[in-house]
Length: 210
Image 1: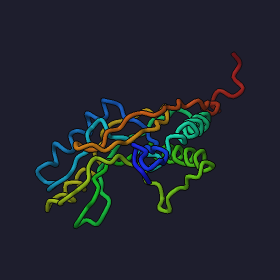
Image 2 (image 1 turned 135 degrees about the vertical axis):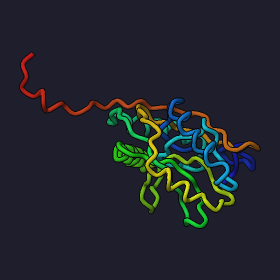
Image 3 (image 1 turned 30 degrees about the horizontal axis):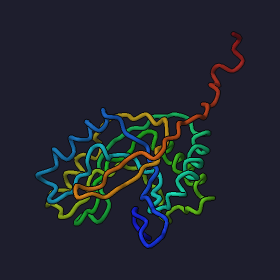
Image 4 (image 1 turned 180 degrees about the vertical axis):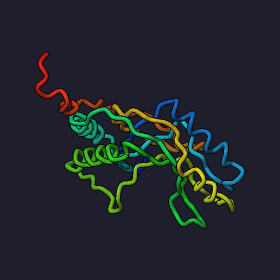
């Protein structure tokens, strides 16, 4: 597929994904990770803190004319989603212990609701031709990609497996654009869709006279 410049007469494309954003407070808490692990981690390309997020769905390279339909799809998904909170807790990795590839922060309480957001987003995008991955959805925050692991990296990550970083409010879906630069990926917002669903009625108030 051609790049953003749309050469060869083809339509220009954008590299996009859907995410839940993180607050500045939570980003500051997570900055302890690269600072503390820098000596043990070997060579790691740490993502810029402003790029940390929870990916709900990676769209890949899409044509610019599809963006409007994707905005509408996310608006429809957000109509039934209710604001909630989730915990960011623990560190882990993808890949074998002897050669981890990705360092991530995990989710604690509220992870199930994040997974439900993923399902809602997937359902809204499926009519546009997007399909989910075969592997199960595992909500996480990618912090860095390992180029050469240090000898004590996985031990250090295991020691942080119960570390609590904070609680994040989820109130909207973000359609993000990813552009590569010499300094790494640069993310920008293409669209946000606020959650508009209503919480279920509180059963403890049923039948109470006002």
